[in-house]
Figure 1 (tube, one colour):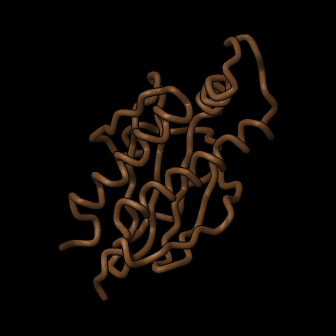
Figure 2 (tube, one colour; figure 1 turned 60 degrees about the vertical axis):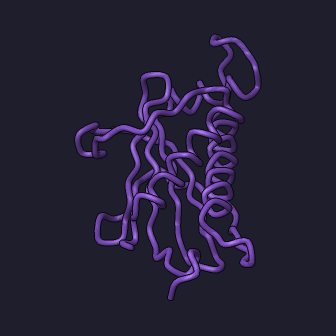
Figure 3 (cartoon, rainbow, N blue to C red; figure 1 turned 90 degrees about the vertical axis):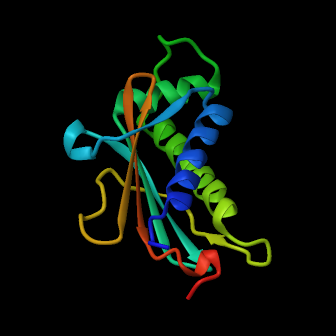
Length: 159
């Protein structure tokens, strides 16, 4: 089984879709494009580390307008309400935390526990290279990017 098997990709896609629907009341649809095809431009985001049983980093990035839309949706306020960048960043930190938790619970065997670090601000994607999965999602016509770097073998009970 390759590191980014269909099982892993589907677990990531489900974690993003479930989180966006249950927390932000928005649908997230996985796309078959790469970030280079989308030319993301300015982005806001958050990064979180999975510490155990594997070391994996997840970075969630969105355009600033989508960060505001997500924040307004979570708080249940009108479109004309503007939030500060701090509130939008806090929202993204919570989203990446929930996505990481849902993802790890999908791929971690029941007899293993996982540990997450604290989300941190991160407005740029991780450096390109081997071992990086990039998921691109359509959310309300905007793009959400999820970058995952690391080795997931131990989470699935493999060495």
